[in-house]
Image 1 (cartoon, each protein chain N blue to C red):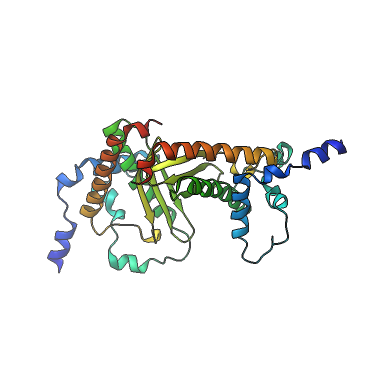
Image 2: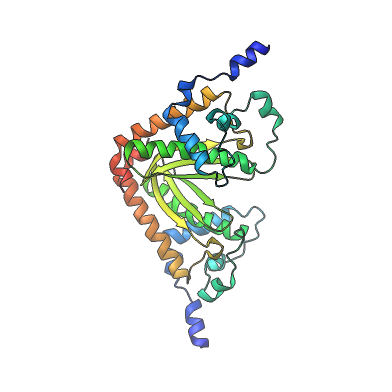
Length: 158
Length: 158
């Protein structure tokens, strides 16, 4: 068991060097006015994005989404928007619309083009099984977004 | 003075027959499960959308937007979305994202196309100078939206 645990926690340094992981870390550090995270490793900064299935079950979906969770949802989609900006040169906006019951939308748009459209459900439990999954999901959404923004560049300019 | 007041309150029946006014009234009546508004005239239903400059000054922009005001913002943009659906056959979604300070976004989208994009400021004071202005603004946004959705119908289908 303990071996399994160690294996799960070890993350390959290349993964943390992926463009999405770097954008997410950069976003978190940019929102750290008091330098709380100055001496934290990138891996430690991304840890709160990992929420196991067992942990999720323990989080109530009654009532409002915790502000820290909301902040992580925002950071995740802002990192995608930042990557799309870097790659396409199109300014992107992020809108997160959450009801008090944890339902809502996550939107990334550029001009009149919606680059990412996601419905959110049980947002109180936002998180990924592992750092690998977090980064893979971020990269997938980013790449699909870049592809769309490139194909319909004229809508981004409206 | 009293003549001026009477003139301001009289609204031509044709205006209330405009497609946007009808869509807005229909939306309000559809959200009236207890039949509170059953015997109200259309004009009376739309009255709360009229907020004079003097009234606006009296509304504080500190703190949250009143739920009734939020409901009116939602109704206004949902009526636009309903009109665009009627005219283009494209399903439309409305997302209102308001911070606790009354700033935010109103978005109407269809597929990957943003049909209406509005930033909201001092949303606590949402309202129009007159019913005429309310309806004119609704019609303008609707027509611009229909034009856009028709020109880029392929993006609506993504």
